[in-house]
Length: 271
Image 1 (cartoon, rainbow, N blue to C red):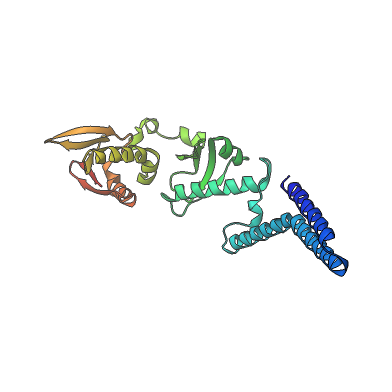
Image 2: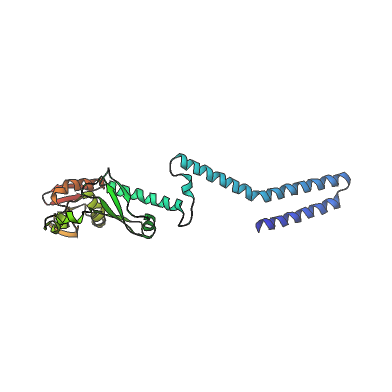
């Protein structure tokens, strides 16, 4: 629409110029002026009609340069930037690999040498819709599988699993299945990521806003602070690891920006 309006305006100007030349000029001067006016009008129209194509060509060259730069930097092959429908492989593969990297970083925070693979035939569907998918893990003591939970807010959580044949399970002592959860082998890093982080971060933010700078984590999982001369419970940590794991748990806290030390009363956490 804009080009059409500009074209009609240019024709109007051309007509006005031609009439003025015919009225004011004679002989060779008139012919020269008419030829100049028509030549200028032809150049103007050519530029007007070709300008959209020139702009598209420039944008295309800029996209190619950007894609080549990304490829040279090793960010991603250029074909992965093509967006297709939900059934197209490039987009789904890009999303799957992104989530795979997040899962790997999550698990390797506890097991640096581990590798894993999906047990699901279509993990992309779980990633897009949310849900739980099972993976096979390698290089992890005491576990051979894990359930990865993905919600619609892109949060990831993990439950470690060991699958035992029924015959082997039946051969275990009857009391083995009755051991309380907090007596099972615990990895402090996984406990912190799965159960402890959310509670502790919320407590630290709340206590810090009210002037506190430390808290005590007791063996039973109670989180306490000192008010005047008495302790006051401010929260509870489910399945808090036993004392045998406290030295490793202190290291986990320190890696996550909290100062911690083991005391006779429990683990003192400062910020």
